[in-house]
Length: 150
Image (cartoon, rainbow, N blue to C red; front, side, top):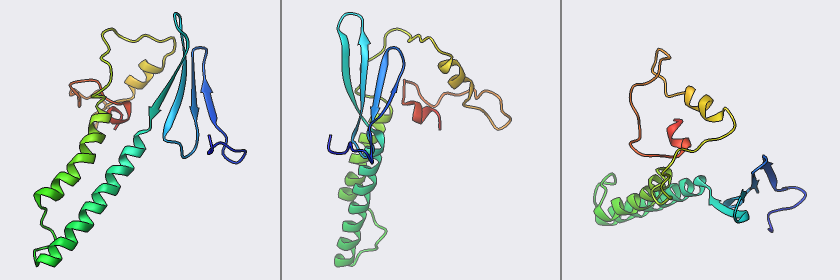
């Protein structure tokens, strides 16, 4: 709440059923959805860029320490030790799991909406170099639309 001020107001996006709140610099997106049985329900969604930033920061720290250790031991700087590799892998694995929706609830039925967004989004890609539909799928399971759109 301390981030919300006249200079940085909360942005609210909504339709008849869902409200999304965004605050610059906040760690989460705020959602309010109408459930026919529960009424208004509230959710917080961690933003992916925080995980990207963390993975980048941890990688830079691991590389810095690795260079210092290699210099002290007289080893080549471009050598990656097992411990340095683990320091790279941890945050990277967390990010990939988030992008692949690994810990999310499984959807057993298709989601149907009232807009043309899904059809239009699917029609945009992926495309081959000639502009035709790509015959391969990059994911064997559901994944973030950010990952699927790249």
